Amino acid sequence: MEQFLPLTRTERQLLRELRYITRVAYIEIKEFMDWETGIVGERRKISYQWLRETLYLDASQGKIGHSITKSQARHIIHELEKATLLTRLSKNDEKSLVFKLDFSLSDESVQNKFVRGAYEAYAKFTQKCAPQNPPFSPQNTTNSAECFEKYEREIFVSEIEDIEKCSTPLESRIISRISRNKYTLNLIQEIFSFWQTTLNHPGAKLDAKRKRVIENALKLGYSIDACKQAIRGCAHSAFHMGKNQEGKVYDHLSLILRDSERIEQFIALEKQSSTGQGEQRHANHHRTFVKTETPHQRVTRELGDQIREYEQKSGRSIWPPR
Image (cartoon, rainbow, N blue to C red):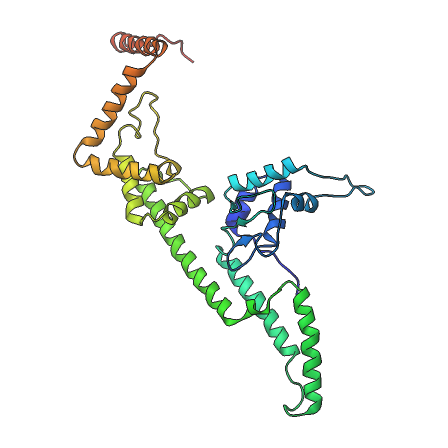
């Protein structure tokens, strides 16, 4: 059976933003992934030296050779981590590397292809080794044994290294994972839609980065209501809605759900807004900033206040028209 290595839509979207050699490295790493756990490096040890040898290209006629250093191999792994394509699990990187790939089976079309391809291989195996003669025929016993030995050797050197991966338990596990992923996608869509309507971003798109941010918040254990509460907390914060010295709005989804500290901060703002404490907190924050500002900052602020006051009274701007 021809081997295939499925890539989800999210993986392809993230890989397009990386260098070509980093894409190749990710594909080489994923080839050794355990499909049940998404972990690479436990069954088959990998290292920076392995990555160097894998990405090495020998110079030949009409081709330019290519090789990387150990430092460059480290940088490639760092790029993949930064792109959230893998998570490092190993502590001692000098001996071996262990990664967790979170996009192993998160795309329904890829899952269906994987299940269908695996079961086609299993069906092919059972058909080839099925008895062709009557069950109690001596000839049938010999043929079946020879067929089984031949196919056993082929299975061990083929893409499917363990025939148990084609059994019913794997189907149940994959179907269960598909159901969980569908449920998670529904939760992500619900939270994103709430952010769109609450903070008035009707044209925003649910890209891979925003999916990842929401998914991480759910993985941390926060419920849909908690995520919505954090979004409302941002909406009730005058500081984040633009009433700050820069006059900028800070309502990005990646800011609200960045980590536990941010989520809990915005949840607290939502709770305080009902009692009016939220605005007071930002007022106190502003006063604290004024008290601790440097002399240069104070002069700049006072000069800006004088310019704005002059423009309001005179009705004209001191700046030349553009």
